[in-house]
Length: 278
Image 1: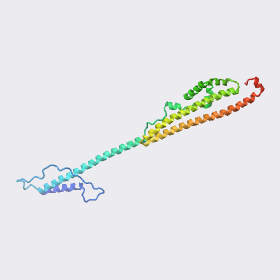
Image 2: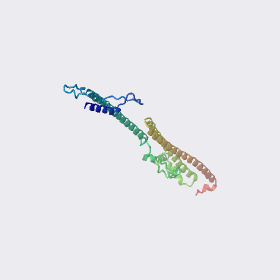
Image 3: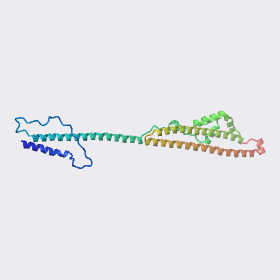
Image 4: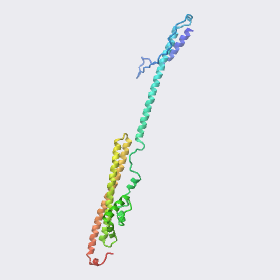
């Protein structure tokens, strides 16, 4: 019975021995296993007076070795579990970082886009300089509102309604006066509008610069760059409109000047002194 127990204990020890990493085996990284604390068992009991035939100190020693081995196995499992928990926390941090990076390059940002109803309406500059000037001969320009307001103020301040009445006269120089007054008022209104819109745009650019300074990700920077390009496109269009207005006024100057000279030449005809031009 004693021999069988020894064989059993020895076989169990050999079967569990591969779970321990020998110190002599070379690895890329050697891990030291910390055994679990020893259980409180009081050690091997002493043999009783009536146990001489059954008490086997060697077998008891092997059992104690199995307990020690179990401590190492338990310690290794605890370390593996601790490493797994650390790895889980690390993977969670990596996931959170990846989500933050994804959020940084996708989604909407609270940067002014200047595309509300008022902004869209403000980009409307009317049908054209000639059309608005022709409409203005009646004393007012219907739209857009900002040009209409400035035009009306000019009519009131400089009493242009009296000049516009010359449009109904038969003399060419009088008709020319009415048209040039209307063209001039429209040009002033367009220039005033362009100047104010440029000022408003500069205010938005201040907001973009502030947002760029506080930006912590690429998405916000790209959004600000996109909005800055929108501002640039709007201001270029305003510049084109202003230049087109100036070109129209310059052209009208030569048209009216030459037509007035023609009218003067016609006035040299004595018949014009007595007959109105039909």
